[in-house]
Amino acid sequence: MEIKSKKEKIKAAIAICIVLTIILFSVIVAIIYQIEGEPNMPFKISKLTIISTAEGVEENVEENSETQEKWNFNIWQNNDIYIDFQKREEYEGTEFIKSIIIQNIKITKQPEVGEVKIYMPNSGEGRTFTYSDELEVKEKLEYKGAEKSSTKTLQIGNQGGSIAIRIANTNFAKYVSNEDEEIKHDGTLITRAGIDKEQLNFEVEMDIIMKTSVRDYKTTLKLNLPTGNITEEGMSSIEETNQKEFIFKRVK
Image 1 (cartoon, helix red, strand yellow):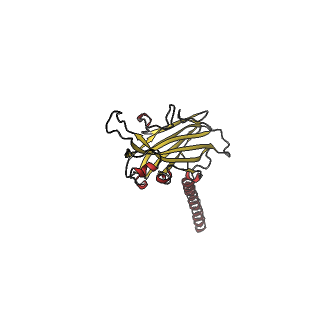
Image 2 (cartoon, rainbow, N blue to C red):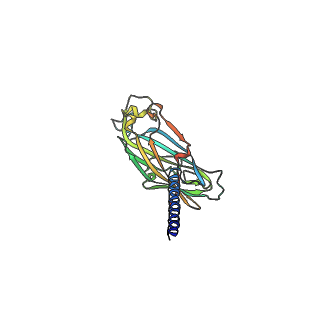
Image 3 (spheres, rainbow, N blue to C red):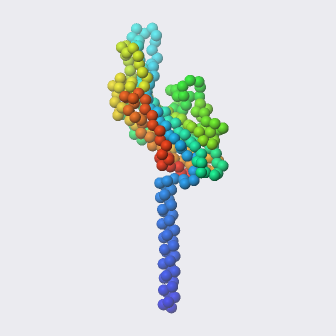
């Protein structure tokens, strides 16, 4: 009876060790997944480009006004964001992109001056981005999968392509002058208006949802805007290609 009892204790100990090993392995796999994300993604973000600058948006002033100034406009600070998607060369599946969605856009740190607004690309002729209320993004921006990418029609190539969105700090200063012969519409306007760049710094967080023909994936981007020293450089741009910055996970 004593021998049988010892054997049962050994079996129980072995069973407990197996269970603990399985639990430990599962925990390790879960931790690795949280850090490194989906290991076999069909597509990746190959490049994130941010272009920061500023420009003057002219006031509507009557031509016959006796007090009409030579220069009279509000200053807006713009951050144009371009995200490039590329199919991974080592991926052997036949998945394709159905859509890319930008949603849950949050200003996690507000600028000291101005109001942050989000804009989709202009669908008409001319500039890529304009300040129409109809183009303001309130909830989400979706690019549909197509044969090739087109920001004007909000389409992205189903085998990879590029999307764009503008995050602007609006109406944070006014510039009025009759003295300047020329005005350069870039980040140097900020200093002319007596604003420090530090007053414009803000932080944004947004989710990027990649819907493919098989499953959906999500990553969260955290951006510090504007980039560079635009008050001296006028315009600044950065490119991020480090894949560790773009961790996608399956959407349940």
